[in-house]
Amino acid sequence: MSGPTNGTAGGAGTVARPAAPLPAQRSAGPVPPRGTVVVSSMASDAHTWNLVFLQLLIEELGFEVVNLGATVPDEMLLAECRERGPALLVLSSVNGHGYHEGLRVIRRLRADADLAGLPVLIGGKLGITGGESAEHIEELLGAGFDAVFDDRPEGIAAFTGLLGRLSERQAHELR
Image 1 (spheres, rainbow, N blue to C red):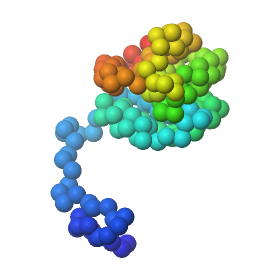
Image 2: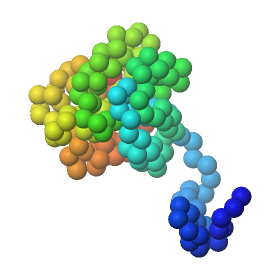
Image 3: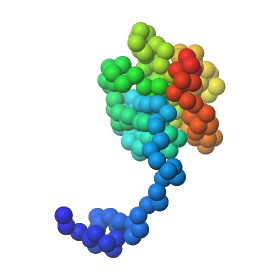
Image 4: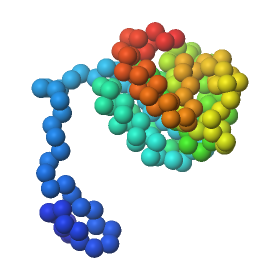
């Protein structure tokens, strides 16, 4: 392996490494996960930074996370949820098509006998203008989402608060 290993800059494109190890986790031993959460975008959304952020946030709250990544076709999303049996599915949108794609995906999930009871949250930029109207949010909830978080700053705090209070059993009881 070439390049610096001591954290010094080594030219264009070189990533500096931390000089000291990162702090240890706060717990004295391994903590069993609170359940598995599947995180995904939808078919037209190629953004990944939001999924990485969500994965890290949800793991910090004690859940195991399966991150399906970007541009996930509906059928793959449903198949992965059937196979993994998660406690929760979190859909994220950055490209502004979350409202329309979310409606399509939630209708497919609720029509699937194996997944009809899966708790599902959606958040991010749900429309191309951002800050979706109350009518759009109500329509997403009415179609079967258990919670909707648009791109307003208070959305992350509300999302974190909900997951912080949620155990695996409670996630299944959302439905």
